[in-house]
Every structure is written in C-alpha cells, then in structure tokens.
Image 1 (tube, rainbow, N blue to C red):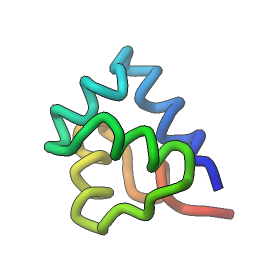
Image 2 (spheres, rainbow, N blue to C red; image 1 turned 180 degrees about the vertical axis):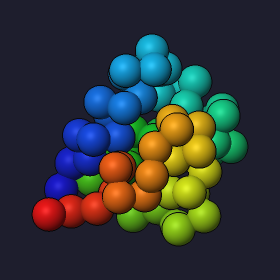
Image 3 (cartoon, helix red, strand yellow; image 1 turned 90 degrees about the vertical axis):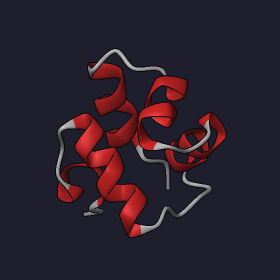
Image 4 (cartoon, rainbow, N blue to C red; image 1 turned 135 degrees about the horizontal axis):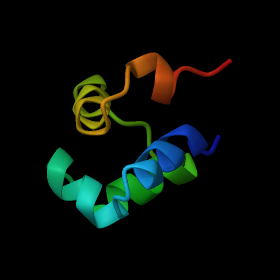
Length: 64
C-alpha cells in the first residue's frame, strides 16, 4: 500500500526525497520505495522519519 501520508508530509515541508533521505540517513531510493509501499522500514527508521517531519508514528505509518 502506498504511503501517501509520508509523501504529503514530505511535500508540505518542501523536502525532496533526496532531502528527506539525507536527514534520515538513508538513500533516496529507500524513501521512494517506502512511499510506493515496496519497502517496510524498521521501527527506528520510522521514528527517525517522524522526527525529521515533526509527525507521530500514527500520523505517517498507521493504517486504518
């Protein structure tokens, strides 16, 4: 399932995938695959991404 919440939060902060990747310590491809739903990130990576985007785990990764 695509992670549109992550993509939206990233775009709202005017960050490219590359920008977010650098801040989170991963590659741009990793961010792209998370957004496309083709990669299941570790909890630590999820937390790091949330801190960079000032969001909670529920905001970005909780599925209804």
